[in-house]
View 1 (tube, one colour):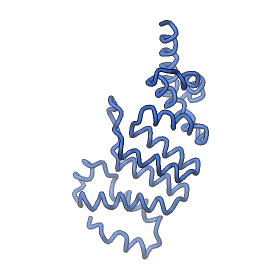
View 2 (tube, rainbow, N blue to C red):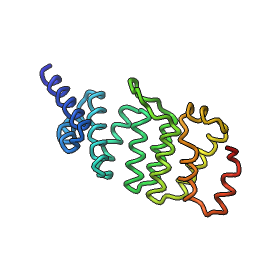
View 3 (cartoon, rainbow, N blue to C red):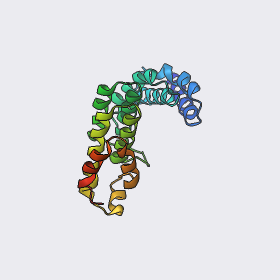
View 4 (cartoon, rainbow, N blue to C red):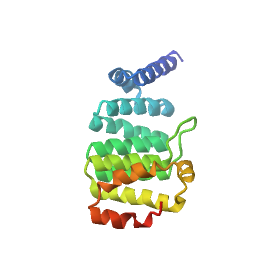
Length: 191
């Protein structure tokens, strides 16, 4: 019993270190707990280590932890974190596979401020653009475009659905297309 309490205390310290911006300390404390038999503890330890490494821009190193936490928890935001790390590590095909899971999974219980899927999609599209995965970024832009078309020009409804600000979205997408193609692309959008 004492060993379990020690592990729980260590995990709590790792999470506190992460939340306090002490990412190296979080990894140091959490790493020994990533393979424990308690799935909940292993999930949380892998998540904190993966996110701490991600925050340090050690994307390649974060992948193992983020993959484990995604498989153990199977929550939307963990798949999103894994997809983002894969994009920044330059692994587009794996990133696309991981991102598809956000549509199949739920938000972790207790998450009070979960970002809606369109917001995740928008951030993912921006990361793809930044890493110059133009075709994948255009595909995600088209996905968002269809969401705007479905919701229509009512900004209140767009906000309810979690869509990003329309003007900001258009400014982000414009860089993906040549000027003539962009004009054609946005014809369906009657905003």
